[in-house]
Each structure stands twice: as structure tokens, then as C-alpha cells.
Length: 299
Ligand SMILES: Cc1cc2nc3c(=O)[nH]c(=O)nc-3n(C[C@H](O)[C@H](O)[C@H](O)COP(=O)(O)OP(=O)(O)OC[C@H]3O[C@@H](n4cnc5c(N)ncnc54)[C@H](O)[C@@H]3O)c2cc1C
View 1 (spheres, rainbow, N blue to C red):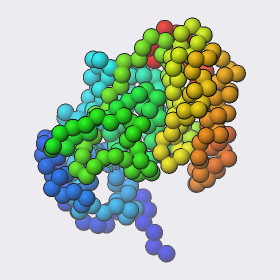
View 2 (view 1 turned 45 degrees about the vertical axis):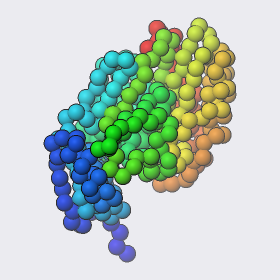
View 3 (view 1 turned 30 degrees about the vertical axis):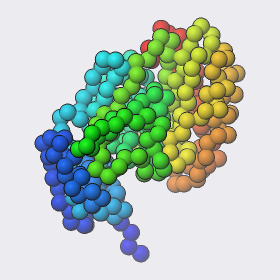
View 4 (view 1 turned 120 degrees about the horizontal axis):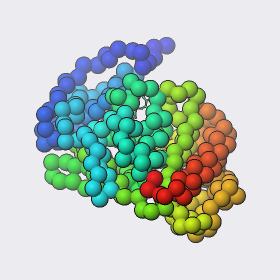
């Protein structure tokens, strides 16, 4: 039986455009609607096209749009959608202030993928296993989306609607991701388990705690590869908020997280393995974030 694979050449014909300005991208995307796809690093889109799961008649490259690249701090942090995973991982500001995002980008596959893959592509592809999604969810990220008609800002928690699906409307482009400044006493962490380093997650988890002495004043926990979309675990967060930090509390929250997720069995792991591993990495990430929060905060 014939089956297209990732090693397959690109069979269908398509037009390719590489505009030099965002307004040109938006005009092309609006004109061609559903028949067009945006391409950033291409590490997801080209796989889809090789496997004949997607066959756009026009591919619009974002590679020439410099205003979509770069990391700017001010009131929080703004990261252009075309910023590569490698550049996010290499940012000293991200490493110092947003440890969970730094660790999610560091955990990304191979150097080749980190150099080509972009932050915007990772989110817009909307894989339940996207590494940056749980990190950005706990860091309270918003995404800035734009069309020729204007822009809107969407909380990342409202962005994903299903596997491969988001609230992005036809012709809409993700411009940037914004993160609020972490307050004093904040600590975050990200952990991932995969079959081999160069693979997407069997399960990954990100947490962010705000600490006042021994008390947790705010807490966010999110997991990837355990449900149709990256998932916040509200009941585990509530179990910690307002109480004291420590191993017992973290183990209780981890048990709740393992109960709340909705994992499937697939080629990467069984549902039972995912459930067990989720509890372990949530506990460990909480322990690390708690320590970081006590080390002067800001992470
Ligand atoms: C070998 C291999 C290993 C991988 N390992 C990992 C891993 O460890 N962790 C992980 O999370 N992922 C992994 N991936 C998946 C992929 O590399 C990432 O999701 C990457 O961040 C995608 O970015 P990109 O720029 O290549 O996206 P593209 O493939 O260019 O685009 C992906 C989708 O997003 C849309 N899009 C892109 N940018 C925008 C924008 N600005 N506005 C609107 N829509 C946009 C495109 O139209 C397309 O539908 C791996 C992929 C491969 C092939």
C-alpha cells in the first residue's frame, strides 16, 4: 500500500512567494484565503506537505519580515513570532527571568530544528506536544494577531481549540508573544520526557510559583502531550495556592495533575506511562520552581 512519509519528496505543485513587508504578507493571505499557507521555519509545514496531509496552492514565506523577529524587553518581554527557538534559548533575559521558557527551548530536539523552527510556528501549529506552549501558559503569555484590518491580543489560554486548531482566522498572522514582568518571589521550571533527545515529548510540564516566605501566593501548572491541547491543571493549582510549599504539598498536587490529564496511548508512550510520568515531572518541576522562587525571584 502506498503511504507518503516524511522522507518523501514534495509532490504537489504550489506557488511560492517571499514578500518583503508584513502588509504584503497580509494582503496575499487575505487574497488567497484557505488555499494559502504561511511558512516560517517550515519544520512542521513541510512535513505535513511531504506526508500529503496538506496541499496549499500558495506558500507565503515570512522569512523576509524582519519586524517579526527579535526579543525586546520593556514592560515585560515581547518576542517576535519569527524568532527562532535557538534565539529564544540563547537570550540571557529569557534565561534569567523566564526559566520555564528557556528550558522548553533548550529541550527542543536538535540544533537543526532549533535554528529553523520559530516560536510563532510552534504555537500556530498547535500540536498538543509543542514544548513552548505549557511554558508560555504558566508565564501568562498573550499572543498578538494581525490582519490587514487591524490587530487583537489573545490570552494564550484561549488560543488553542484542538489538535492543530487555534482561534487564528483565515489570513491572520501571529506577530508576537508578550510576557508580563515576573514579580518578586517568582520561580518557574519546565521538564520534558521523550524517547530520545531529538524527539517531541511523551509528556512535558511547566510550573510557575510565586512565593512569600513559606507561602505560595500564586501557582500555575500546565502539561503538554496529555490532552488534545496543552492543558492547565486548575485543581492542582488551587491545592497549592495559599498554602505552604514543600514536598508533601507538591506530591499532592502532582497526584491531582496525574488524575486530571486525559492522555492517549500512541507510538511514543502508553496512556498509563504518560499518567505516571506526568506526576513525577510535575512534582520535580514544582520543587525546582520553589527553590528558584526563594533565590531572589525573577524567574
Ligand atoms: C525532527 C523534528 C523534531 C522536532 N522536535 C520538536 C520538539 O522537540 N519540540 C517541539 O515542540 N516541536 C518539535 N518539532 C516541531 C517543530 O519543529 C516546531 O513546532 C517548530 O517550532 C515549528 O516552527 P516553524 O517555524 O518551523 O513552523 P512552520 O512549519 O513554518 O509553520 C507551522 C504552522 O504554523 C503556521 N505559522 C507559522 N508562523 C506563523 C505566524 N507567524 N502566524 C500564523 N501562522 C503561522 C504555518 O502556516 C503552519 O501551519 C520537531 C519537528 C521535527 C521535524
